[in-house]
Image 1 (cartoon, rainbow, N blue to C red):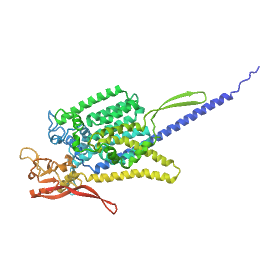
Image 2: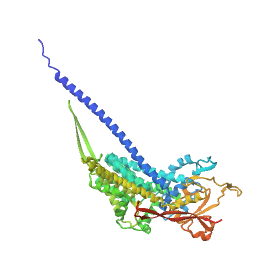
Image 3: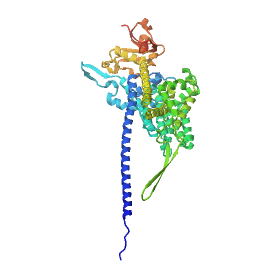
Image 4: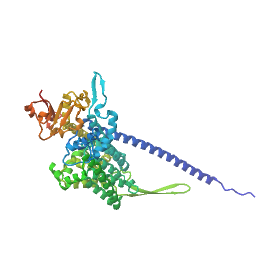
Length: 604
């Protein structure tokens, strides 16, 4: 008896289909993996170029306008003294009495932590490149047997570039968080918008307490934007810690910014528990206060918590009003439009447009079921309340509350600019994509030209503002003019053209033979003069304000020539920006400068 066998055709067909499906799936996975690698490489290249743009723009601002004004003088002089004096002459009470802030303490004490941080980063490279002091570098005979070295101006450029680099790094960190959350295109436009604006890029390398605080605030923003990838609230925890450090060490008014942000995290984003906020905030605040008291008491030679005295002076006693007051609406009606200029149009577009590039504003769960023939994936998405407006509302609330204080300056609201630029970047992205999606070529071209034109217009205003700013530091230029007149330095005040004078040993000690004694008027002192500009081996400098005997000096940096009656003569004058004069011919305006400071030399 012969048994009938069932045909195996169907089973073989099913196996072939399954094998083909597996092969297709493997090929698809390989293609997708290759695409992810290529996209990641493309994104990394784009990130590098945008990072480079931020750094180059900062570098240009430092090189073109290296001098600083009175608001920045405390931290700048502190950096000079830490690098060049250090612990020399210090005792059990604190630092040496040669430190500038002990002779000119200012209205209220400030923390030294920012100056100490930048000086610590700069000290080793300066010593490696330029020796223990900047004028020891390149002490060789060059060309015509003439001595050539460098002045402490090299240090000025270096510390400002170091601070600027740290600020740029904070912006780069924020840019990556923006890219992760809203897409690379938004991050790209964020970069272009930021570097096209004048104020933020001009100030990020300037040693203001606001800038040290701004660095921390920008880093905290990056943690804030990463809230959707938060694992157990760790990102928000870091945000709380960084903001708390900024509040209790650098600028207490950041509390007005941190408050709305914390409320947003508690009630809108719901990624922060109140008890966790209290524990992290109180612990970090106590450590910050202890740290700043320990450091600053040494530098000020007395027990001191600087930021409390600043808070008491500015807020409780409201003495900052003595420096001028402005109306409540000034930040909204003048400061922000002046800072954003043409990119304000992008901001309004960003407010009314929907962001279609947000990558991580959704939380999802994935369920996978498998049968013998097919694989099915089902994804469920739940939209969170984290939107661009969620990040903007606390910023606007901060500006509104801060507007209550009558004394106002643009630098007080610098912390709001990065988030406002984020909204502007979303607006620019949507505008650009809207133009690209149109079929009408002329309309597409007009939208593209309009978008690019805004950035070009912003950049032109920034370049013009930068040029005007270089004319606002007559004090710094007067020091270079004096040293050039004495044939000590080159045109830029960087290279030394003469060796230091010989040492005198007939008194039993070592003391430089100095014949140049310079008095610096207050106007010069607050408009660019710093210890980095001094040549201490050649001249003795004095900024004494009262009971000055001009006969004790042979050179004066003065706001007028009235000392001609005392036997001085004018050898140079330093002009500064006066006003802009409109003209009927191209370019239809003229920048008018007027003599502001005079180099006076005692007649021999």
